[in-house]
Structures are given as C-alpha cells and as structure tokens.
Amino acid sequence: MIAYLKGTITQLEPTFTLVECNGIGYRVQISLNTHSKLQGKKEVKIFTHLQVREDAHTLYGFAELSEQSLFEQLITISGVGANTALTMLSGLSADELVQAIRMEDVLTLKRIKGIGAKTAARIVLELKDKIKVDGSVGLSRDSGGGKPNSAAMKAEAIAALTQLGFSKADISKRIDRIFKEVPLEELNVEKLIKMALRNPG
Image 1 (cartoon, rainbow, N blue to C red):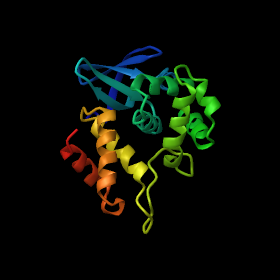
Image 2: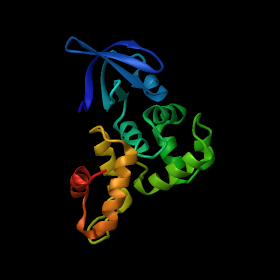
Image 3: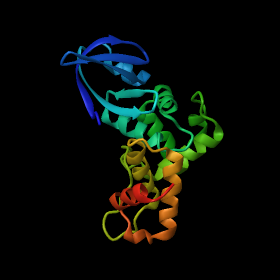
C-alpha cells in the first residue's frame, strides 16, 4: 500500500500529475481541487489510494488527507466507483461535500455529473453518520459503553477488503451474512474482516 508520495512534480494536468520520487515517475489521477492546490508547487507530498484491478493499477492522489479520507469513504458505497468519487471531489471541495452530506442536501449532490437521485440518497444515508461533529471525515466510533456501530464497521471492513482485491458487492453480502449469524456486541472491525475473509462467497 502506497500511503503517500513525496517528490517533484514533473507534469501537472487538470486530471493527473506526474510525480518523480527517487528517479521513479508516478502517474497520479487527481481531482480539480487537488490540481488547484498543487499549482505553482514543485516539491510536494501527495496522499494516495492505490486501486488494483486485473487490467490496471491506478494511483489516486490528494493534496489533503481529508480529501483522501472522503474519497475512500465514497468508494465503499455501491454504485460509486473511483472515477465517480473523483468527479464528486472535482465538482465540490471536500468541505462542501461533507456539508452537503451532513445537511442531507441531495439536490447539491445531484448537480454533480453522473450522480442521480438514488445514488445521492444512498451517499447521504450511508455517510451522514460517519461525518464527525466538527465536519471532518471519519467513521463514527462509540466512546465507551455504547453499542457497536454496524454501518461504520461494515464500511471500514469493505474499505479494507476492496483494497485487497475483493469486489464490494461480494464483501457486502458476506458481511451482511455475518451480522445475521453473530451478535453485534461480539464483533469489531478486525474480527469482521477476518470472518469475511474466511466466509465462503
């Protein structure tokens, strides 16, 4: 897993940048927001997300950790792929997107190309409780004594397992089956991931 790149920008375009690190050039897909933050800079640190598929390994980059975090939350949602998530982060800043989700502003989300009413509603439903009170992006966690948050655990497990190459649809079904078979209070994210890896598809 490549967490970030620290190096020199050799080319910067609206949708991608080339970053040279120790003599190796990395092509990184970026949002328009990240593009604007990288303009005029030569030495940079870009947070990354690596998507591995049979036909391609694609590196997505973000100028800020909050944008990377939101991207990784978005792609856990059924119907939202990496390119769609990047389009969303090009149409709105991470802060604007977080605000729209918190306010359940489906109309704002629908204005983004490729986002229909159903997808916008699904994004709000699945992410509104994972946005922290201060507006930052993160999975909601219980602060002792509360019941485990099944939606948060599922999202985090899916995020981890899709990075291992599993399909979101398959993993989602496995996790739903586990929730039916195992009491919620006996689960945590680590255990959920291990069980999903063992659970037959």
